[in-house]
Length: 421
Ligand SMILES: *Cc1c(COP(=O)(O)O)cnc(C)c1O
View 1: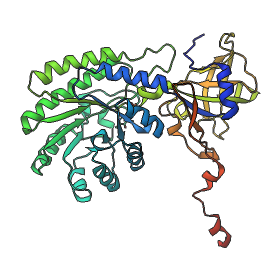
View 2: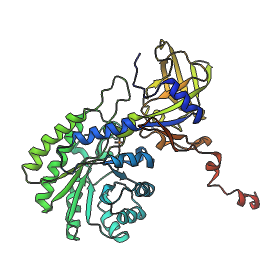
View 3: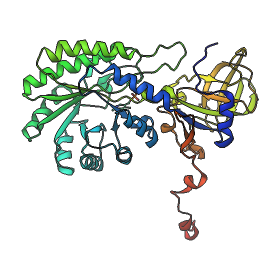
View 4: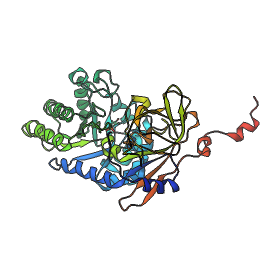
């Protein structure tokens, strides 16, 4: 039976649960820091390398502050995400706004914070100028169309709503240059949860070649190339983690043969990963509320897909450990359900597990990114708390669970009194 690393014992979890009732997401500071350092280390050859953490993965200021202290910036794509970065003390060009269908207020806020603005469309140059004024530095998101393969989650580039076409990209730099902008960068993001390091090497190669072409044709120099996020994590026990060191080595070879030989050095390399930064270091902890045996065996949890949407949205696998029962034979088959009135409210389907009982603790792995943040209130479900397992062993609550009052906060019960129906 496949086992995955557990950062806590059953006894530790019971202690935590006695203070913070299930369900909750818990993040492991030590592992997040070690992983962050490994990434930065792997790219130590790249002058000015920066990882802009994709805030949407885990928009919690405590997590962002930890990552800031490791030298990360913030990749934001909404006004609240920009405000969060500001609250954590991330500012200036440590923020990248990579949004799409962007409202004016995001451009205004980004400009105010001194963030790098990455435009998703050629028409946004004029829109940005009109609403926020032109920035010092501008970046464009490139969509290669059928020049490059995408991947399963993100789809093929020519079908993706993101970015500028090849032709538009050259036009956009020309326009920006003619408007007096003097600093430039380039961005692309073509994969999501991609486990093949070769994909990122190919993307870097494509972007580096483009940098050379743009520099020569438009006679500008580009300061950075942001090759996006999308580095995958091993959700399944048999998946292999992306070898960051070999990925980095592959990119360095392309950098040396394309950027250096064409005199486009220095070009700073940026990443904006979310999933690979925090994903494996977060866990959704839940308990079995009911065991139900009908045509199938169901374990009804106190968590649902409102706490972790990925299994319902993408059919994703999340590994599950039953603390205290790790070594028992996994000879039962269960669907692990939540209490939503939707039959796709299943955190696992046909999962081989040891025999479950009411009250068993269920640990769902790899929920540190795109987990809590994708939560929703459908069916009156309240979002769970988020906890942080600190390096010194302390457990702190970094977001409380929602209450019914939170759920009702946007409703007007005063007005209802005089509303006649
Ligand atoms: C979602 C997103 C990311 C992060 O993706 P991960 O899969 O979490 O690495 C980075 N950049 C942009 C523009 C995104 O939309």
